[in-house]
Length: 444
Image 1 (tube, rainbow, N blue to C red):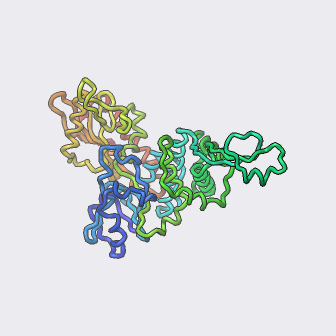
Image 2: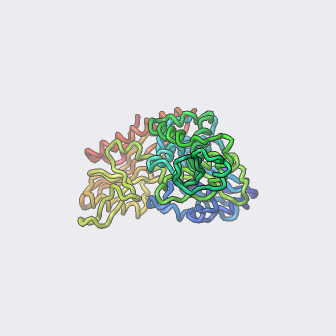
Image 3: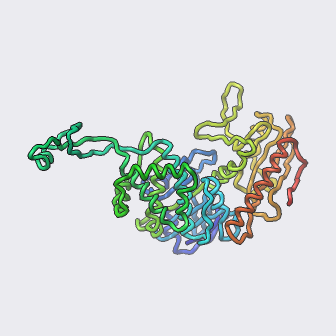
């Protein structure tokens, strides 16, 4: 496996990787996500969910033997060639930062990663996602589809099956053989979910994932009750029944859940690329993941986190509710823009600066700025003042969250990250009351 980071600036790779990686390189993500590559999962599911236009990006580009990555992290493979893309804010091979963000975003605190960062830990990513998407799907109701059922009783309510009736009911004793088309909760989708549940129960690290909260437990129990015909020897049959793309006008949340179940149950096969030139993997948009991770603790400070997809939390440029815009985070007197990039040297992109100033002007906010990660271990959190604006005289800052680099294990990393989050929120909450002086550094 080839290992690199996002935004690597270019990495020379060995010649034997070139034929396979050439199939993926320089292609838009929107072109890779298709029926031809059902085993390639990219999050967010809706590629237009944020303003970064992830659908137009490349997973990586390839020029001669130089491979250059963008903001995409995770794992992808084609044939026997695989590449692991970790966060550039994790200097060592133990990419605890990516695991930590995934656990926070998907509300899991289970894996200790004693097995290290390898193919097995890539499998962990799938396990993180399973209960999250199981709950999302079941909130739409238990999936049902029409099945043709055969009965032989006195309550005739369908089409009489004469040949079966003659075989079973001569001499006549009151029963009639008939067929009826009716909804069934015990179907190929719920059976697929059931097989995944049973598989996870047996996993040496993940068995506790099904007991994380009462909602997950209720969802698991609902699937168990809905699948009385489950037989663990039927797994291959169920997988084959689910090979076709899933499409349903109402139960649309089951689409991603089905993909995740298929990935979990066929992971060993995927790792070895049994289908020639088929792309498989699990990828995350770094900008989206960073933003969703920040929301897990900024929400406790009263920040709104607008959702472009369903138009929640928007602000408006005009007083007639026109000109809808979606800052990453905002509350009264405060605008925050999440950037998954290095900004500690005050070099802010012109468009990013114009955007934050526009939002501050519309909301008459006195405080605004950018929140970014850093691989600098010299501080827990840092606040840098860019300057004071003309006009409303609002102040623009950069807030930096340090990502721990030297940790002995994942548990220590989590403890230090939580400590750094507290330092960062303290800095931000103080600014909510009154603007601070420039270039203040918060040290323990």
